[in-house]
Length: 156
Image (cartoon, rainbow, N blue to C red; front, side, top):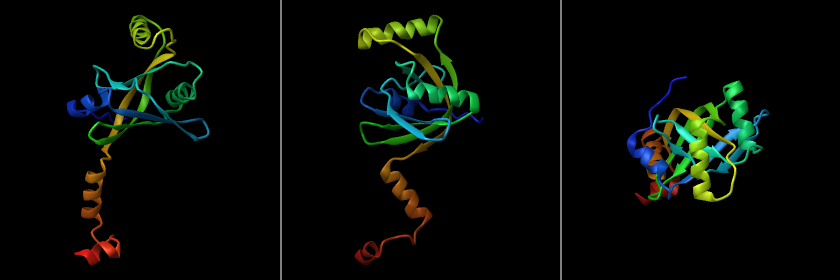
């Protein structure tokens, strides 16, 4: 595993309450499972952390399998200004007891009321790719200059 660093600017986007955050995992058969997870954030160690509220969730099951079988998970974020990133990483830790778990559990209850906390998950980033449309469009045009629709070429 080659771990990459989440830069401060991206961490701020991920940690913003306005950012839409999506987590994609796969089950044992490879079937994708994609969910919105508002609790996704970058922790003090620079890893992706999120709080799973339901112990029996498909996400929880998939991440347990991900630890056992070294399977990647993906986090996709869409910021307020339409900046978009995908971070792929390995689930490396499931915290379901102890002081840190208790601290997060109290925080979850303050934020959401009388709910459970199934686990605090840690995902170590392996790859970060900016997916913002304008940036990807520029990259495609530079990499594949001849792949244009004829109507776009005729306008020039």
